Length: 114
Length: 321
Image (tube, rainbow over all chains, first blue to last red; front, side):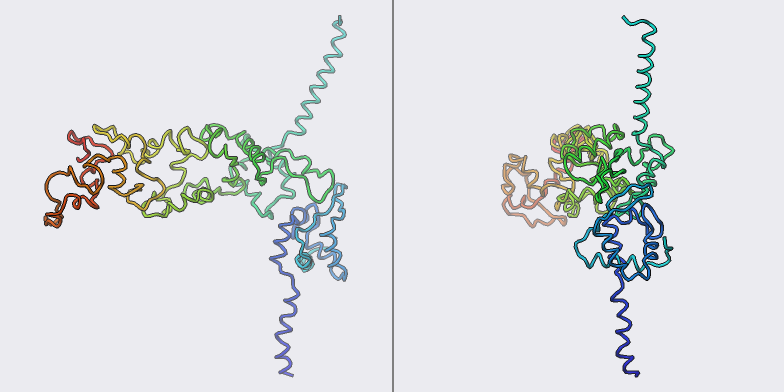
């Protein structure tokens, strides 16, 4: 049993890390794409705070797909004054970078559902 | 013929139109205060890759000064950028975008800055080297940064050397002005905003600029050395040299670029030297009995002519005293 734990131990430790988002890369892409112009991490601006977005989608199995579509499709978003604009698209052609950004957003904790 | 009573409605209409015009102008005129800036800082804040809000730590952020601009004073009203009328994911650019590097954009950027920053150091900006080559103000100045590195005479050299790479190499030679030591800045000698002198000299001429520090070379002298009075760079290279005293070449070669007939010609001729053999400090005669040309070989003109910048001694016609 001890031997099994010793063998499995490193794997158990590494597994969550390998699936975790690279926060630095995600923030760099977010900044490059201008996400922070409308979304603060903690405070809402023209768009909701990223922590609040994470809270909204917590427990939603489709969250990753929905957010990837949101940041890549240019779908219409409604502003507080009622006018609509196309949502900015992330400035990368690498789907892994986009997925990493979305994973980082969804990993943010402490938000309130809006 | 219009009667006096008929003029009144016309005057009222004209007055109304003038009032509307003034109102329209005030609608589009940029608001210089923090409230006016809010239309920009709503999106552009401390999360930007380039500093934005730190402009409030600079003279451009002193809102108590009525001359202080707001965001839209420099970047233009940029109504399309603010309103994004087409609702596209890519917002239209601001009216004056300082990140566009084209000659046309550079012209607009320069006019924006020079619109307020007239006179003084920038009196001769029009027609200056940097202006003619479409180098906008923001190529050197970090307007939003709390500390603009070119405003510090010690750190400004890295900005200058980003383009002036020859000079960057020269300041690391054996004989230099103490730029690399951090005791001088480029602006001690140059005015990058324009000058009536050559090579953007801070003063009216090269010599006048040199004399601000090297006043003892200025004269007037009883015996003056014309090339010295004419241009220091006849003999010196200001940014750095591998010869002593920032000289362009070693003596005697430097001197003999002009003095081809003195001592009868080429360096090794030795003819027309003062009589007698050369000696060393111990009064030995290592060169005795050798030809005069050997005595002159590798000798320094300045050993006998030390007052090469000019002499006030009655007998200093040959700058020997």
